[in-house]
Length: 261
Image: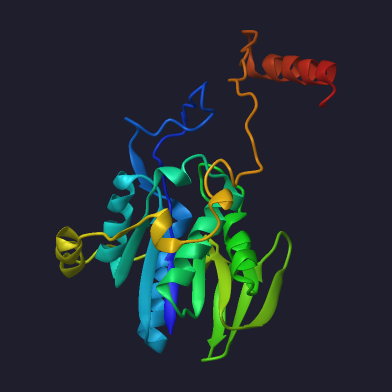
């Protein structure tokens, strides 16, 4: 069994800045972290290895600073890591990103399960995992909250939907995206941290993974940002004084004026 985990480095802030010229997120000078949902994907891959044996591999696409989260994955127990980094990958939307990741997965050879977090907190599309499956021409099970059974040929999962659960069975290989209900991520071990410190993260470029040049970066991204702006927030309010009963009555009357009471 080989378990491939796709992880992403995201800005560690809710005050995301965007370059008005390139329409891209400004990452320089902004603290970055492992995408929170990807921690659950890493943990699940490690648990599968502990239970069924095999090898765990983490890959990430991004600039050189993304090595940090790959070393974090090593410290948690991942066996191998690879960084996909090339100027040709710049400006990728979810389709181009998933294509790049799928090419790397093919380059790495046989695999059983590709595990992704539910979504990335800087985009919140939830598209990359299913799109990887499309590029690889294999099944996908999204929003997995529990893996019930795993054999050499099949996997059976429970997935979380808005108002109910579904139990699905799929042949391997398969892509799954996981939600936070699936497990509780572990903390790095001392042995893992020492291993991570010594790890030299291999870098794969476009030439290493091959494929169609037209499907990378901006050229391979049908999604285009044509305009961006910060919404203006207007704060309006009134101040009232009086006894509690009087204030409650005033509030009720104001709500009625707004049509919400």
